[in-house]
Length: 415
View 1: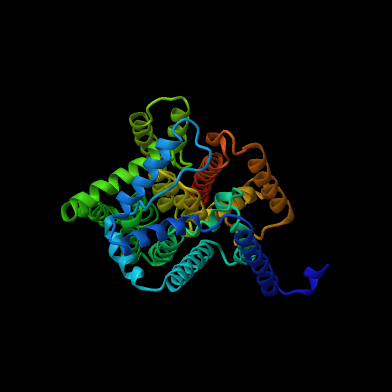
View 2 (view 1 turned 90 degrees about the vertical axis):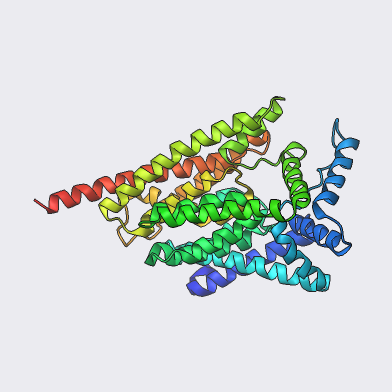
């Protein structure tokens, strides 16, 4: 076979070349850059001196009034980032449209590269060569689910790249200040990303106060436009609400799937979803905090716990979208690899954990089954939510078993 004549580096380059060609073909042959178009529309409205939120709302309401009974086409989307982002848009509006688009796409690519780099840091030296071979395929399986989210061009690729890269010195050396700065910056665009402030609490030490202060700062940044631009903020909040009322863009988290179910049933989803989210987040938070305490007491290697903690913080997000899942693909993949090694080999973190053929075949079969049996219709049974719940469940069980074994080994050594 040709693979026998190629080095690992050459194989990685070959796989990435195949991934890039596939992305280029998809861009040429089908819809692409749909989120970039939303940003572009907002930029054009700003160039003409218009309120991008009010202009987008008018487009949405006109479409909804025409097709309120049975929309024949996907509904339009509008700009739903904070008014604090508008000065940056105005700066981009000064540039030629081609240059602005090129700079933005370059930032998306750089953000994705940072996500891959940060994911590799969660792996051991024995796992990284195998993980590097899988990263090109992971582009098309955000959250282990086949999806074309990479073609959206959503700003989340940039934001998660910054946050994940800043988290590496945090969980490795206890330096979290850049992570907090990255999360605050990201929350200006997407306020739910403030839930990532749970990560330093779970994997760091004595981070309750800094994380809480960062959370207060994030909420202040969210409320600041209301004081500076009250009318603009009102339009912004209405645009956010129409994202749910008109477009039903609830995401693929537990709360989002419940909202979609209630909407299909013709029932109000806001209050029930809020109660469910708070209850789910509280239970998950307690489980993660208990596991974090056990990890510290057992003295487990950070690389063992960080991917599970990362997936847990993903589920704390009230609105998990495809591009959110894309950022957590590598942590989810690492959790699955290690759980399969534990099941098939009874090894937790042996340092020689190369991905053998049985583990690769079992993992591949599981992903295929997940994507085959959970189809896109109805949307609340799509594979995104089962993938998240399966990974966090087996990941928590894995960490609990690892801490128990570490405690037993410590007790035996102390006798």
